Length: 195
Image 1 (tube, rainbow, N blue to C red):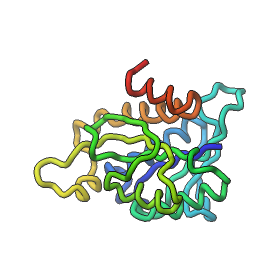
Image 2 (cartoon, helix red, strand yellow):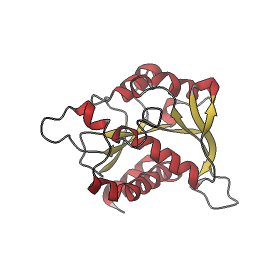
Image 3 (tube, rainbow, N blue to C red):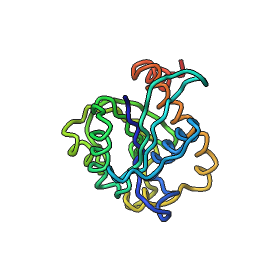
């Protein structure tokens, strides 16, 4: 069994911000599976059990989709609780998150590695006791001028970015489904080279 977790902050105030892009990808995956995330009190998340990337009538891979009900910087507790509750190994976790170090709209897959200053990843790694999980990095670019990065990630996308965001969220959801159905290596090749 796999888990796909989208990072972000709870509540309507943060819903449309750059920091919450991971949650939008997970919500789209749920819609594609014909469901919605529901409150999962035992783990302080909203979650759904789905079959991802399969044709109607096929079984496919069972996947737990989730978003934390806690703030980004303390994502580790809810994500760890979700993994334990559903007995999912860390290597079967995919975390979708915003990435300052990639240009806007760039999507990259990787397994393991540091947090790159991302406090959500840092807290998940601490809670799980390992960096050995897959990340889908959704590039949001660097803040303009001298804008503080923490203000930038908590702001809404620009008008120009907003016109592209639905297509990019769709591509990100495709990349997650590829990891689940093709494996990380083939999914990475398809995402990074288009083949």
